[in-house]
Amino acid sequence: MMKMTSQDKLGWFDKVKPLLAVIFLQVGFAGMDILSKAALNRGMSNYVLVVYRHATATLVVAPFAIIFDKKVRPKMTLPIFFNILVLSLLEPVIDQNLYFLGMKYTTATFAAAMTNIVPAITFIMACIFRLEKIRARSIRSQAKVIGTIATVAGAMVMTLIKGPIIELFWTNGRNSNVQGGGGTNMHDVVKGAVMITVGCFSWASFMILQAVTLKTYPAELSLTVWICLLGTIEGTAVALVMERGNTAAWSIGWDTKLLAALYSGIVCSGLTYYIQGVVMKERGPVFVTAFSPLCMVVVAIMSSFIFAEQMYLGRVIGAIVIVAGLYLVVWGKSTDYTTSPSQTSDEQQLAPTKETIDPESNCGLTLIKMSSP
Image 1 (cartoon, one colour):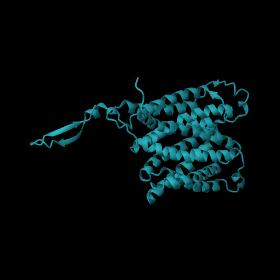
Image 2 (cartoon, one colour; image 1 turned 30 degrees about the horizontal axis):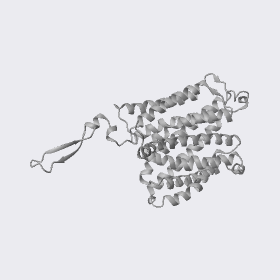
Image 3 (cartoon, helix red, strand yellow; image 1 turned 90 degrees about the vertical axis):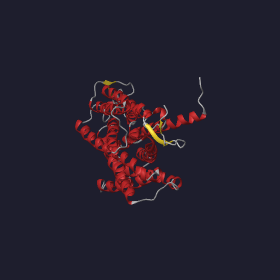
Image 4 (cartoon, rainbow, N blue to C red; image 1 turned 120 degrees about the vertical axis):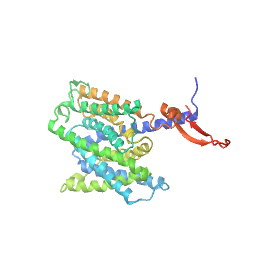
């Protein structure tokens, strides 16, 4: 049995790093959903939460951007600044406010389940903007398409089909007075679902535009600071309009509200924008969003403990479909970014790649260099 050399281990770790990074992001999002739901339940304004969140992210990430991006930060141009301005509007303002509003009307688990449509939306947009590789006759490309459809189907099952309640011993006797258990108003559910869906479109658009912007402004930390800073300014303007005359909405103490603002700002804005930018440059926006179902699974488990949310059979079935679809997407994308000739298709292996002239031949014989198998 051959042992892995240090170089092999390093190469293996380089391949696994993007996977570990996106898993970390989804676990971070799950924590944000739980803390934000708790803060919103205590009466915190979602508009104010968005402002405090990005103000925190700006203050935390800015020093690192100043130090580490000093040599790689390109010159700011008007087109780049316009892209950043739109980025700060799409995710920090539109997506997050609609997401938190939708969560107010529903539950943390419901909101997390709805975000599973983001991979499908991102996949379609990435294909339109030619950021994703699709070959109709490729089995892996077909797996990406089928997996994306399965992800959306599973999210719809989780959202629309309840089925019988799965009794969990830690929720017995606690779910009668909990919002979003069995007695959530259907009108509120529909309203919340529409808000979250619009937010998902905004989030997917943000991912595509971030991938495009990184090609002309490849300084992830600096881009994160710009997005958070402009998001703070734009979010403040929105909050002042929506909470006009309500100065109490801006008050915050040493409680869940402060913890939600700090956690979501540092982990889910500062670190997230940076990490997903780094991963996106290597694997593309579809890979980053494909792991959204993991957030839903973690939130469902944590919510059953913290908020005593009831678990339904429909959610479990939907979760299984989502995980299966996620596996197909990851498997389909596994060879998108390989460079080894041995991992290319049979057609690519047989195709001529270069023409050279034999210098020793008097008649200029053309030699065709084939790709090595």
